[in-house]
Every structure is written in C-alpha cells, then in structure tokens.
Image (cartoon, rainbow, N blue to C red; front, side, top):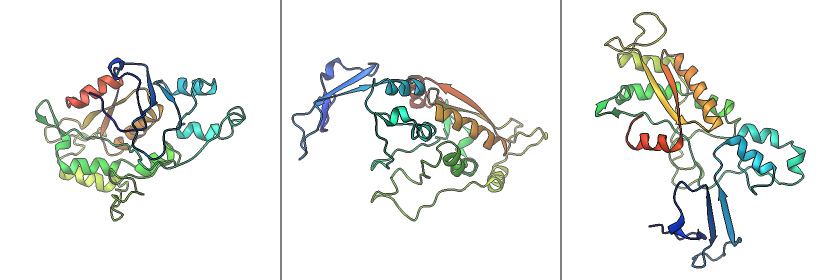
Length: 244
C-alpha cells in the first residue's frame, strides 16, 4: 500500500510498479500545507545513462537537470544552454551523502572487515579530500554523520578522518597483515592476499572514476581492490542478502 502526505500523489497507485520507465504525479487535493503545490502535473522520466540525460535536457525533453560536477563546470559557459535556461548552485536542506559499507559477514562467516582495526585502516586510506577535489571538483564536503552540517541534529564536535597512509599500515600490521613475500600485496597469517571486490552501480560515471581512484589509494597500502560493477536491481538484491 502506498500512502503519503506530500503535495503530489500518483495518478493511480495500482497501475504503478518499480519497473515503470516514468512516474506521473498530480496535485494532491488533500495536501495539508498552507501553500498549495504550483503544478497540476509532474512527470518524472527515468533515464539511467548520464549522457542520455544531458542530451534529453539539451533537446528540451526534460525541464530540470541536476548536472554532475564535471558537467556543470562546462555547462556554465555553454551559450546554447544559457540562452534558454538558468543555473543554480545550492546546498539542499536534506542533503544526501555517499559511503562505503564494509561487509563484516558473508555466507555466515566473518570477512576481513569484521576486524575494527581493518575498517579503521580502510577509512584512513580513503582520501576524502582528494575525492572531493578530483571527482566532485569541490562541489561536496566531508560527511561525518547521516545529518547535514547545517541541520540542528549535526554534532559540530565530530571531525572527519583524514588520509593517513602510515597510520593505516600500522593498524593493518596490528591486525596481522604484512607483505610476507615482497610482491607488493599484503597477506594475512594464512598467507592469503588482502583482496576484495567493491560492488558499485555501473551506470554512474562519477562512481566509475571514484572506484578507480580508490583502487590506486588502497594499492599504496598493499591492498588489491577488484572493481565489480552491477546493474541497480542486482546490486540492491546482493546488498539486501549481504552478498558483497
């Protein structure tokens, strides 16, 4: 059952399924707010490919487009678009955040990430400042909690982890990982190399670039990361069943 109290509602909830290509919303005549929603109808078009979304926007097929950072830098000086559109930079009040989930148990058995020292080491190796600079062109900021830094729920005393290769190596050594055969890859006490697969959504161009950066960052500590792109429904199923 679909139930909501927002300014818009589905035209017919019984006809909608998650695999539908588009979502049509109409004004909710029972909306509780003081200001009524401005549009009679909103049509959400689901276009998974980044390039296709931008092309559709250029051709007038959609009215609003949230540009990736690398696109925005180019589009700000694109006369064709500027003549027929406006652009805005803003921090949404309900801000989203990206994260890496270290799976601590798979197939009923603990993984390498069950050790808190390993998880801490991976955090020290994840150079958030460089990710923000190189991938998001400074259109992002470090996340230290699920809450926006401008929200009342945010704890201003929380500080983000900073990149620290030496500290990460120390923690990994304490957890039993060393390069025992001098091949540049860490091994555990059983002699098995420290390698893992990173599952990610295959259609996001920024994520693809991010994963390649992470692969290089982790390699500096002797960790082999194997990029594992997946389609969105497959990835969600594997996450739900902890197969990652």
